[in-house]
Structures are given as structure tokens and as C-alpha cells.
Length: 238
Image (cartoon, rainbow, N blue to C red; front, side):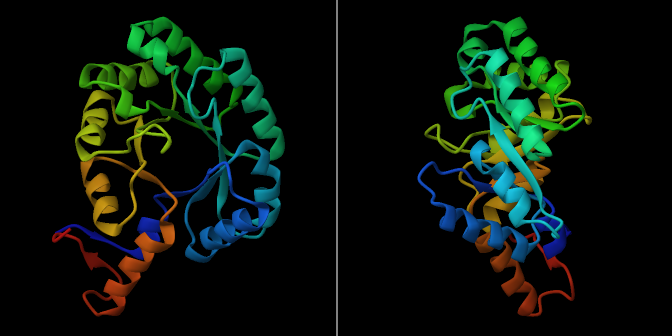
């Protein structure tokens, strides 16, 4: 029977702090949530990287950011420049948006070269590639996932959360089936509750992008506090 602890689930979460309208006070509140719940990382707007690194000093929460966000249509040179600035500001992970138009057009070399340039500029840091699956059919999702692998990135990711649709179990499963074990899958967009988080994990996601970390982990904590397990919860009913 599948089981998961609160610490194991928290270690899968990239807490998203990406809404363009968030004030500094609101960003700080989200950073405090990430620290309180012990999530793996925060994913912040590029202009917030240095502040997030300072705010989270002394915690184990990593700071990641987005590249070419949210449309993916900036030039490769612009994406590389974003990567270099993000690293200088302290980011340890980078979630780039694929050139969606190029992927849909069948320009596979353009897509792969774009990803490869970002991965090279990342200098060993984790690179996740967002496909924005709501704009793609199954063939494009599978092909895009394979291009992520070909270009040497570390994760293929579903969505920005700003493209009109988010992660689905079917898309996560297709992405997982399209790449080898060296490439991981991140489900992002619409992951707002424990049941959905566990469905994405069972479909093959090893990382979850969500702004609902407290809700998801709070649901799990409540179940554990209710005595269903002494440190792990049976998730077979989710």
C-alpha cells in the first residue's frame, strides 16, 4: 500500500510565488509559509531572487526562479542572460519555458538548441523545462519531452500556471513514459489539494509546483494527527 510522510511530501514541493501583482509583504508571507512547512524550494519571480535568498537564510529551503516566463518566446540569448543574472542573485534551480511556438511548428532543432543553451549556462544547476501542455496535443507533449531529454535538462514540467490549463494525470503519465529514468517530471498548475498531489505522484511526478503548499501539507498533517498512521499515511484511498 502506498504511504508517504509529511517530510517526504514536503520534499517534493516547489512553492510557487510567481503572481505578478504580489507585494513585497505578500512575498515575505509566502516565503515564511515555505520555511514553516519545510518544502524543498520556492520558485520566485526573477526580481525576487536575492531577497528570497536573504529572507530564507538559515533554512533548508532552496530558491529557484523562472526563465523566459511565461510564454517562452524570448530569444535564446535573452534566456541565457536571465540564467546568468539568476545565478548571480543566488538561484539554485531554473524553470525555463520552452519555445512553445517552435515546438508546435515542429522546429525540433530550435527547441533543443534553446534548452541546451540554458542548461549550459546553468553550470550544473537543475533545469526544468515547462512545456505548457494545455497548448499541446499528445504527440507534441511526447516529442517535447524527448527533446528535453535530448538537450540534457533535468526535468520536464507541465505548466506555468498562467496558460489557461494546468497539470493532468494523463499528461504527467505521458511525459513520464516519453523519457528515460534520468529525466524527472514536475507537475505544476492546478495542484491545490492532497488528493491531486498524490495522483500526480502516482502518475510519475517527483516534484510538484504549487502555491497551495500549506493546504496540501495541512491536509496530510490533519490525517496523521487523526491517528491513521504513526508517521505515514495510507494513501490508497486518494
